[in-house]
Length: 449
Image (cartoon, rainbow, N blue to C red):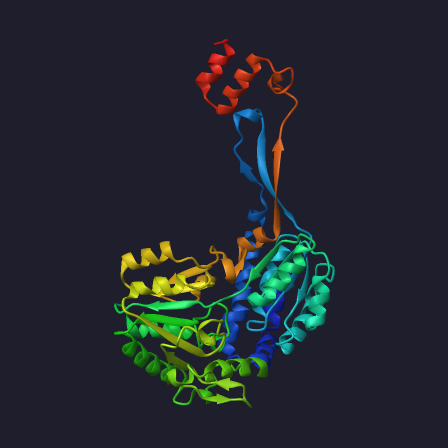
């Protein structure tokens, strides 16, 4: 509890330092940094402090007649020493949130922040040393060599946030020691937009889940939109209007949008944009500035499926729109791809909502909004298939970093000879009746029928 309290105090006292580090790494606007990283971390810490005593209480389990008299419970115990490998897009939150979960479950933690966000990594190392017990949490800074060295060690659990490619490397390293993993990956998270929506509200929420969310550099950000051919022109026009309202006529100079994190990521995104079958599909934006690592909010229409941009997670300000004849055709588009981390559906059609929930598999799903599902304390955050395995947030973090130990209590009274040799026909008949739980059969067996 003391370590969690110290994290809460750190978040209060060092808010300005955290915001400055996030600006250095990503030019993240102050309000966005506060809401998406600091405030969310504070909520996680507060929830753990308030809920921990209840989470720790052993869970009583009903026993069966075959173990009578007895009682049983599930006891949560720490796994041991946990490795958290964080990422660069939300470099503070995605470092400290898993640490909160691991500490709440009673583990010691080694945190490896991302070297791609060096200011935040350095700050985390400084703050952890200043506020937390070094026997509970340590920070190891560095790049690939340091991460590789860490993965060669034996851990009791590893949580990794990042790409599926590196996720496979982490999982292979963990397998050598039979170490369980939580992999928070990503994928191409679509937003389906029906024609019966409040278009202005829908578009604003899509922008909030794309460009106002670290400029598209988010694992749960909207990767592409699916809508009907007839509705696409209205949707594009609405997106243009609202983007201008949010970021002005020249978004490249807006102070309310993050930059691309590095020259490597910038070059990757420009390559996606300049592919032969892609560059002529731009209907808005497309401007780039390598010196400032900025790319304007860019909308593309009906890009061919065999292009790179339609086959890898974009993780940036590029937004393809895929059109179908009927909105139900979006089912096939989504189900033809690996399972995404999130799916967003905008519709007033109740049957369509139900069909999406029942027929689309994804880490999470949100109807008529984007990304806010991660703010609901009672919902787990995690992927499925290519988008990850395991989950955390709130009590799911506590459970994810705990071993659930089964405990059965019995006394020396009520000992039955039924379970011991010699196995007579009478014992066999009675034992079968007891195991079946059928009271009538038990009575009949006892009286010799």
